[in-house]
Length: 468
Image (cartoon, rainbow, N blue to C red; front, top):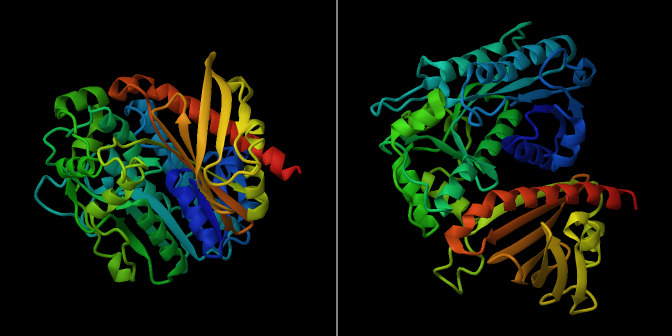
C-alpha cells in the first residue's frame, strides 16, 4: 500500500517508517522541513513538506491508500503555559482538521485512517480501578486535548467505508530516546529516584510493540475503533525505578517530593504524579501478540543497551551512556561498507574544528585487532586517541574500542543492513566520562559535541557517497 505518515521524524515515526517499508509498503513522509527529514529518515521515502498549518498539498494524496497521523508537539518538553497549550492544541487538533479536509477532497481511494492519541484521555485512576477502552473521558487539559484530537478526525465528509483506528498510547520505552532517555542521566548520576509516593501506577509499552501494532492495524481490515497501546499490567512508579536500577546494578537516588515536582512543572506534573493504570482489552482480541507483555521484559531489554560491553569480564562495571544514530544511504551495502573499511575516510567525515588526523594504522587493511592512532583537538586541547578494532564482520558490522583517549570508555559499534532502496547504517556509541560521577558535570557538553559531529557526518556522507 501507499501510506501517508505524519510525525515521521519522531521516535515512533522513524521506527514505524522502517517497519512499513520492510513490509513492502511505500511511505510518503510528512515533515515541517523536507531537507531535514531527508537527512533524518532512515528509510526510502518521498517527503512532503507541511507544517501542520494551512492547506495540505492535495496532489500528494491522489493515490494514497491509508493515513497514519502521529503529528504533534511533545507534551513533556516545556511547562504548560498558555502559549504552550495553544501549540499543543494547534499541532494536533488543527493539523488533523486540515489533513482530513485535504483527504476528503483528494484521497478518493483512502481505505484507513490511523490516529494518534494517549491514555491521558482517561485521567487519574485514583489508585483503585484499572481503566480500559470502555472507560470514560476524564476532566483536565490533557484529557480534553486527547478528546479534541480524536474528534478532529471526524470533521469533514463522513465516509462509511473509511476504517478508523485510534491509538491511545502509554509511556513508550526505548533505548533510542523518549521517556527513558530523560530518566537515564539522573539515574547514572545517582540523583534519579522515586517521584512523589511512588505508588502511582504507570502503563508502558515497548517501542517495538507500539510499531508492530500500528503495522498490524494498517494491514488488518478488522482492526477499527479505539485501542490502548500498553503492556498487560500497569506498574507502580516505585517498582519501575527499582527494577530498572537493579537491571543496571546501580542504586536509585533520593525520592523527589510531589510538591517539588508541582513547583517545577506546574500542571504538567500530572504526567508524573497521576495514577494511570490502563490496560488493553482489544489488542489481543485483534489477533495481535505483544513481544514484551510485561514491564520486566521491557526494562530488561532496554537496560541491555546501557550495559558496559566488558561486563562479562568485569562484572562490577558501571553502565554506560549511549548515543544512537542511524542513516539511510541510497547505495548498495557493499559500496557503503567499503567506504568505511578505509581508515583514511575517517578524516573526510570528521568536522574540521576537531583537527582530526590519522597518525598510524597497524595493518595495511582494517581487520580485527587493527590499532589506529589519531591526533585531534577538542575545544583547543590536543589529544591522542588510539582505538582497537574489537569486532570486524564485513560487510555488516565492526566495533572500534578506545584504548587510549579522553574517555573512560568509548565503544562505537557500526552496523550496516541492506534494506529497500539502499543501506541502513546504525551507530551505537557507549561511553563513560572520566572522574566517575564527578565527570557528569561535562555530560551535556559531551552530548552536544557528539550530536554536532554525527550531524556533520550525516551531511558529508551523503555528499561523498552519492556524488561518487
